[in-house]
Length: 622
Ligand code: NAP
Image (cartoon, rainbow, N blue to C red; front, side, top):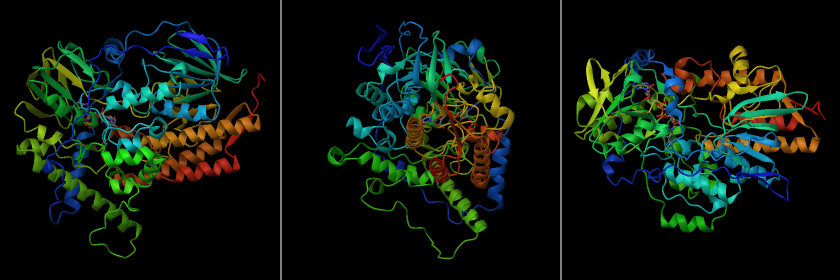
């Protein structure tokens, strides 16, 4: 039975997890690479400094790409690109019109972590609505060949100690991560609370009841006291808007809906997009297909990967070391610079040594002025990018291909990529880089891609064109006290939240890892943990105060939004390029990612001590 009632608790128990669509939808991440020459970053060329010439080069690179094309919504004739190809048809079930205490949108890492916290604290009347057929979120949807995490799995995977699981590799494959999510869900009874293949279509606050009314595409109309939006920040796939794309006669799909029914062996395959996804895909595709055409608009920075297997020593140590993963994640989180965090040495992360810092070359004890400090950061950043560019020359044989693969923008301005096999893959005779800079692929016809008057006939076309950043469809369907959606409120008056988690006029609503949401590190699992702890604190505070409803004051969100703008503007000089992080330069400063580091925690602690930002009340209906 897909819905039944637990005789002990009176709560509904669900059985809606869909069966896997095909056994082919499983795989492994890319393997350990033993070629040492591919695992060292060359020195930066001697005398390279970020002088006026180099700055002009970066500027030109940016300006050229500012005209990059648009994306299209995956609706109408493109709706097929959104279909769930991973699960069998949805499990039949009755529509629900009852009430639960906490309704969570999503069943990815955030939902699993939140459930674990809530359950431990005795909140059990919790319901999860998930568009997909199973848990995993990002790792449910993204199953392309070569997928793996980029943050080390020992710090990234949630609930390792609680499940006794030790990842097989430093960068676990997406398939392994997905399986871990399923095991977490099984172990902690998550499946009983989850409505899969259920898309929330509207969440509307009912002032008279003091409840959210949540409607779904399965005909549900449920009441919930609290709603938590936990469906991720890179959720809605994007397709580049390209003239004639609907005409293509071969198979075409987006990387987050990988079509395993299409056999790629012996085929001519085109790949549009060379972000983090494209970079992981290229070496794996090259192992299978007859010809691979990689259509690149902007090259990613390809840093060292150094994939490795988990050692026997680690396994033995962690079996008996209580709290090993929490401690490791906490050490990881102490590092504020992204590259240092991602490349932190194992000796530091495992607690064998206290410092993660490499001694600075030519270290001077002179105190720097703010301008000097800024210049030093830009110089250091330039030096890393010089090394990354030198790596391209060292690894790619054809000078024209190498030149096209070199990125000219500050490190981490665009999402950095890490790989030891990507660059040498372009030395294979059947792998062709098609440089489409600065505008990108602009035409597709029945046969394939057309660029600069050349037709590239293809059997299969793969779009690795990414996702909408920090703007899931969810924000459009949350209707607050004054009848406006969250999206509309932010469009009218700018993005305004408190801590990125609450917004005035949207009582009893929490957003996890949304715009302006800080509190974590380069490891999103940290942010999710911080947000989960905050929600739990709020629920417990309300329990103690016997309060039904919490909203925040307008002043608190105005002040917080101003803070987000300032920390973004203050650090913007390090992010001067065209990037999805700021919606290709179109976003208002402070409206997306939070750049204040540890300041988020200071603000949070202040709020929790004074309770000043909060308006607690009883529900009008009570
Ligand atoms: P993405 O970073 O947004 O990359 C999209 C790519 O498509 C870019 O290279 C973009 O070029 C290109 N593009 C768009 N329109 C084009 C056109 N008309 N012609 C040619 N190229 C075009 O998307 P993604 O690679 O899927 O990555 C999204 C995010 O998901 C990552 O940044 C990361 O946060 C996450 N991710 C994580 C992992 C991991 O941890 N293992 C793996 C994959 C993805 P421009 O750069 O010029 O816009």
